[in-house]
Length: 388
Image 1 (cartoon, rainbow, N blue to C red):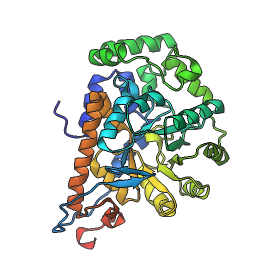
Image 2: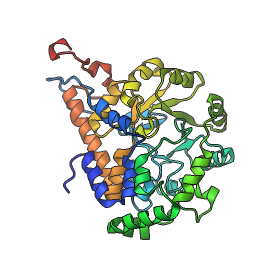
Image 3: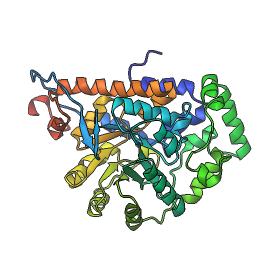
Image 4: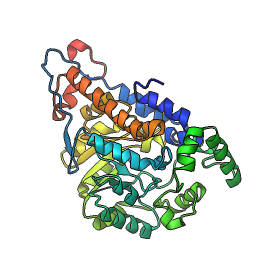
């Protein structure tokens, strides 16, 4: 394939990965309405093209959460991402470091904090779930601090997992244990490049951090059972503050869609939030991230860092999010498509593509610096060109 945009990398990943892994990356909850809305509503944002502006010295540099970044983009946490290429999170972190952007490791990644940190010179960010096993959470916090993590992302929009029908159909989570294993083995055999790179050479095939709770021999089915037992719908803001008291660095609340929740995060002194619907993988039919972003940014943007994820498939999408009020963007599926298509090289190519698209778009918008990207670049919905 000749790969021109992120969606081409999606197709390349689909061709290379076993169905159960691709569907886990690509799928959402229920009928996947919110997953589609994330993309469609973001692409519906219209920007003001300007001419004769002399914008020939474009800089994408930004400072977010204490990090100087080559562009206001980070690789967001994605569970099981490391199974899409050999020791995948290590490869992705290396690509992010080379591109000058942060990498955030998921608690339920295939690779551990220690493994990822050993592969790069810049410490990763770390994402943590609020779960019933508070001892496990304290252990994860200690491990993150030990490898030099300075920012913790606390995911709060998953007190219970949303029904993901693709995972049931693919054999990742549906049917009997034996049927699931046979289905996954059959799918892996149909993808020989992945089976060699990851299946044979990419072990251990575990969810790295969860292995400390389940044992090194635990597999994917054990992971699903453990997660089902440990999701905690009783958590409150007070629980989040208790975790904050254990963490000396910056802490970001991930999974906010409501203005009142954003104000509560600001009142309680958190350093930032991520406007996110978990990639459309939780409550279907809720707001697209881009539709929730503007009101939240206006309410708390002067008090804390506001990031967004959900539906970002291009550098133009990054600028759309910034124009709607985000300080920066977390990539999710976009970087995992690159990883699934071509490992570290694929992630690097996706990041280079995002950067090039941002540079061209900023030139056409007539701005040279990221701090010049704001609501002034938006075309009001329904407005004619001569009215902007």
